Image (cartoon, rainbow, N blue to C red; front, side, top):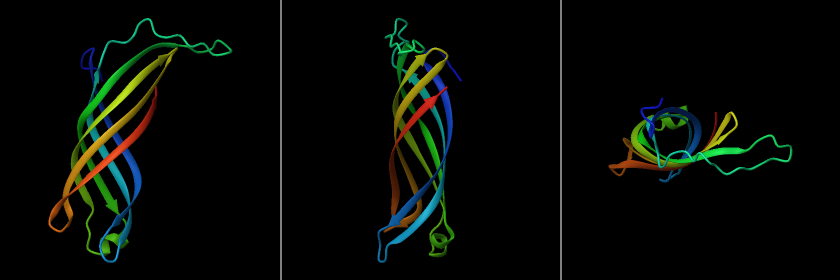
Length: 147
């Protein structure tokens, strides 16, 4: 959803499965389903390159028309739903808030876009405290978008 020529609103919903190990005696292992919702903004670093660099395939089928680098930034909400064994040991499902920051390049081909992204996110939760401190999670994700 474009807001203007340089900024685009990019809502995103992600689902994933993860494994967790809480280092205490004894170690506690758990699996979880993670649901992340982010309401980020894509900020273009420059206008699309109208000239572009032309790459021709052997069969002359595809070439790059333009590319545009951009930055992703916004808030992130994450819900971790743990397995029953982890819950029975006294832990709770986690609900955390955080921020994400990323970089991507939109490659525009004939009728197709290809946009690889790398994102760093940091989130914090007060649930499942260890030694009365807040739990902070760092993550790096790679994404490849085709549209």
